[in-house]
Image 1 (cartoon, rainbow, N blue to C red):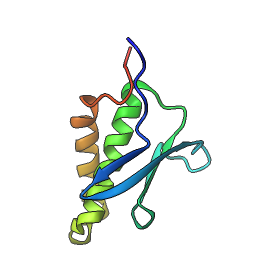
Image 2 (image 1 turned 180 degrees about the horizontal axis):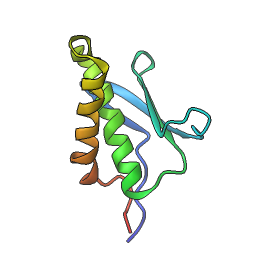
Image 3 (image 1 turned 45 degrees about the vertical axis):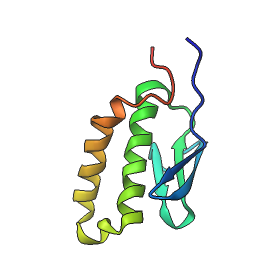
Image 4 (image 1 turned 135 degrees about the horizontal axis):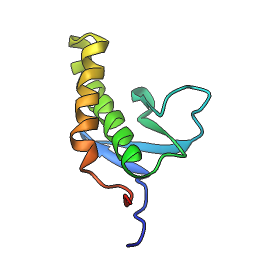
Length: 99
């Protein structure tokens, strides 16, 4: 099966979000969400299920921030919701073929 392209942009709540893949090893994170810049950064070495899960996690952060819902919850709750998305939906969405 041919490898699918990693998404470079997504539309989230009517906003175009750019997705960049870069070395994040200095940050200690696999991904990050920059709502004011409409930007998601993903560790460039990720593949397969791990890539899918991190994208789903960061997309959920972006959705919560764009909607303003994050203003009504502690960060630990936001992170729990993102982890729920990552472990549920993220394992079912395929951006890249999984061996």
